[in-house]
Image (cartoon, rainbow, N blue to C red; front, side, top):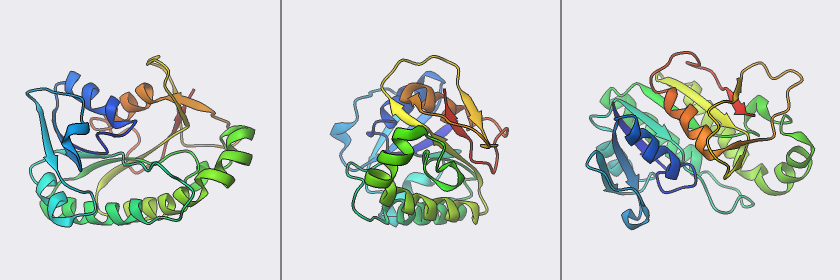
Length: 209
């Protein structure tokens, strides 16, 4: 499978790229600074460009089978439109070039996953740190839902740097649910599995332990 990864040098991308290569995929990474990409492989193509540049995104999307969107930001406190702006550009490129499958990583705090992260996340982290980020991720998710793509939105719980356990919970019915954490390695494996599965097509699974 030919897969474009946006956010390949981020904390999730550093797991997504090697795991996708291990699955045998041909990976394209659209990155602003190729020197920040640690992985090297004959099936890895690095393209210098910005996810907010429509020309660069269209060129990277052309010829792909699927796209993984995993962009992040270092500071969460200030308002942003980066996620929704980049998603709008990506959707247009995918619809133009006939690339159907999009797996987008947002996170706990988006949409109806808000309030399911436990006391620390829900009462401190979200209102004081990540609220502005998730205001834009809500806009991002709305754009994806309104698109014609075959999409899955994955909402990981709070990230850890723990090892890949190989088991997790993926929930779409969140009544009475609290999910506090997931390792980036396990979240990446779940994201990549959705490239080949329709189990959560047009759904927003919350994933964690």
